[in-house]
Image 1 (cartoon, one colour):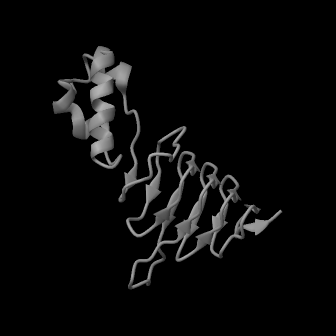
Image 2 (tube, rainbow, N blue to C red):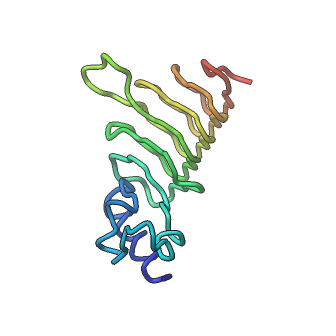
Length: 149
Protein backbone atom coordinates (compact mmCIF):
# COMPACT_ATOMS: atom_id res chain seq x y z
CA UNK A 1 0.00 0.00 0.00
CA UNK A 2 2.83 2.41 0.82
CA UNK A 3 4.31 2.07 -2.66
CA UNK A 4 0.91 2.97 -4.15
CA UNK A 5 0.72 6.09 -1.96
CA UNK A 6 4.24 7.12 -3.00
CA UNK A 7 3.32 6.54 -6.65
CA UNK A 8 0.18 8.67 -6.18
CA UNK A 9 2.19 11.53 -4.66
CA UNK A 10 4.68 11.36 -7.57
CA UNK A 11 1.82 11.54 -10.09
CA UNK A 12 0.31 14.44 -8.17
CA UNK A 13 3.58 16.39 -8.15
CA UNK A 14 4.09 15.84 -11.87
CA UNK A 15 0.56 17.10 -12.50
CA UNK A 16 1.07 20.30 -10.50
CA UNK A 17 -0.96 19.06 -7.51
CA UNK A 18 -4.18 19.23 -9.56
CA UNK A 19 -4.92 15.65 -8.72
CA UNK A 20 -7.47 13.88 -6.61
CA UNK A 21 -7.97 10.17 -6.09
CA UNK A 22 -10.80 10.09 -8.62
CA UNK A 23 -8.42 11.17 -11.41
CA UNK A 24 -5.59 8.84 -10.38
CA UNK A 25 -7.46 5.65 -9.59
CA UNK A 26 -6.25 3.89 -12.73
CA UNK A 27 -2.61 4.66 -11.91
CA UNK A 28 -3.08 3.28 -8.41
CA UNK A 29 -5.00 0.22 -9.51
CA UNK A 30 -7.79 1.08 -7.10
CA UNK A 31 -11.36 0.11 -7.64
CA UNK A 32 -13.87 2.78 -6.76
CA UNK A 33 -16.41 0.16 -5.78
CA UNK A 34 -17.64 1.88 -2.64
CA UNK A 35 -18.92 -1.42 -1.22
CA UNK A 36 -15.34 -2.63 -1.01
CA UNK A 37 -13.81 0.33 0.82
CA UNK A 38 -10.72 -1.38 2.22
CA UNK A 39 -8.25 0.24 -0.19
CA UNK A 40 -10.28 3.39 -0.77
CA UNK A 41 -10.72 4.09 2.94
CA UNK A 42 -6.97 3.95 3.51
CA UNK A 43 -6.23 6.53 0.83
CA UNK A 44 -9.36 8.61 0.50
CA UNK A 45 -8.21 11.84 -1.06
CA UNK A 46 -4.72 12.84 -0.07
CA UNK A 47 -5.18 16.34 -1.40
CA UNK A 48 -7.13 18.23 -3.98
CA UNK A 49 -5.57 21.46 -5.17
CA UNK A 50 -5.61 23.65 -8.23
CA UNK A 51 -2.08 24.97 -8.57
CA UNK A 52 -1.52 26.22 -12.10
CA UNK A 53 2.22 26.85 -11.94
CA UNK A 54 5.51 25.34 -10.90
CA UNK A 55 6.30 25.99 -7.25
CA UNK A 56 9.87 26.40 -5.97
CA UNK A 57 11.28 23.26 -4.33
CA UNK A 58 11.42 25.12 -1.02
CA UNK A 59 7.65 25.72 -0.91
CA UNK A 60 6.06 24.02 2.10
CA UNK A 61 2.43 22.83 2.01
CA UNK A 62 1.83 21.36 5.50
CA UNK A 63 -1.82 20.51 4.77
CA UNK A 64 -2.16 20.54 0.97
CA UNK A 65 -5.94 20.55 0.66
CA UNK A 66 -8.03 23.13 -1.17
CA UNK A 67 -5.14 25.33 -2.23
CA UNK A 68 -5.78 27.39 -5.38
CA UNK A 69 -2.94 29.33 -7.00
CA UNK A 70 -3.34 31.19 -10.29
CA UNK A 71 -0.85 30.50 -13.06
CA UNK A 72 0.09 34.18 -13.12
CA UNK A 73 1.06 34.30 -9.44
CA UNK A 74 4.74 34.47 -8.53
CA UNK A 75 5.80 32.46 -5.48
CA UNK A 76 9.13 33.13 -3.76
CA UNK A 77 11.44 30.76 -1.90
CA UNK A 78 10.62 29.21 1.51
CA UNK A 79 6.93 30.10 1.33
CA UNK A 80 4.64 28.14 3.67
CA UNK A 81 1.03 27.83 2.47
CA UNK A 82 -1.60 26.16 4.63
CA UNK A 83 -4.92 24.59 3.58
CA UNK A 84 -7.73 26.37 1.71
CA UNK A 85 -5.61 29.32 0.58
CA UNK A 86 -6.51 31.12 -2.66
CA UNK A 87 -4.07 33.30 -4.61
CA UNK A 88 -5.76 34.62 -7.72
CA UNK A 89 -6.89 37.46 -9.92
CA UNK A 90 -10.03 39.56 -9.65
CA UNK A 91 -13.05 39.30 -11.90
CA UNK A 92 -12.87 41.92 -14.62
CA UNK A 93 -9.07 41.78 -14.75
CA UNK A 94 -8.58 41.21 -18.48
CA UNK A 95 -4.89 40.43 -17.92
CA UNK A 96 -5.78 37.86 -15.24
CA UNK A 97 -2.88 39.01 -13.11
CA UNK A 98 -2.31 37.56 -9.67
CA UNK A 99 0.25 39.01 -7.30
CA UNK A 100 3.74 38.13 -6.17
CA UNK A 101 4.55 36.39 -2.90
CA UNK A 102 8.01 37.24 -1.55
CA UNK A 103 10.50 34.91 0.10
CA UNK A 104 9.92 33.48 3.61
CA UNK A 105 6.19 34.33 3.65
CA UNK A 106 3.68 32.32 5.72
CA UNK A 107 0.07 32.19 4.55
CA UNK A 108 -2.24 30.60 7.11
CA UNK A 109 -5.38 28.58 6.39
CA UNK A 110 -8.30 30.12 4.58
CA UNK A 111 -6.45 33.27 3.50
CA UNK A 112 -7.34 34.84 0.16
CA UNK A 113 -4.97 37.05 -1.82
CA UNK A 114 -6.84 38.67 -4.69
CA UNK A 115 -5.51 40.76 -7.56
CA UNK A 116 -2.13 42.16 -8.48
CA UNK A 117 -0.98 42.32 -4.87
CA UNK A 118 2.64 42.10 -3.71
CA UNK A 119 3.39 40.36 -0.42
CA UNK A 120 6.75 41.48 0.97
CA UNK A 121 9.51 39.21 2.21
CA UNK A 122 8.89 37.65 5.63
CA UNK A 123 5.24 38.75 5.80
CA UNK A 124 2.61 36.70 7.63
CA UNK A 125 -0.96 36.47 6.33
CA UNK A 126 -3.36 35.43 9.11
CA UNK A 127 -6.06 32.79 8.86
CA UNK A 128 -9.06 33.80 6.75
CA UNK A 129 -7.54 37.19 5.90
CA UNK A 130 -8.64 38.75 2.62
CA UNK A 131 -5.68 40.61 1.14
CA UNK A 132 -6.61 43.28 -1.40
CA UNK A 133 -3.59 45.61 -1.06
CA UNK A 134 0.18 45.22 -0.95
CA UNK A 135 1.71 43.95 2.29
CA UNK A 136 5.03 45.41 3.44
CA UNK A 137 8.04 43.26 4.33
CA UNK A 138 7.97 41.58 7.77
CA UNK A 139 4.39 42.64 8.43
CA UNK A 140 1.52 40.57 9.82
CA UNK A 141 -1.95 41.20 8.41
CA UNK A 142 -5.32 39.81 9.56
CA UNK A 143 -9.01 40.39 8.98
CA UNK A 144 -11.40 41.22 6.18
CA UNK A 145 -10.10 43.25 4.48
CA UNK A 146 -6.61 42.47 5.77
CA UNK A 147 -4.94 45.13 7.88
CA UNK A 148 -1.67 45.31 9.79
CA UNK A 149 -1.52 44.30 13.43
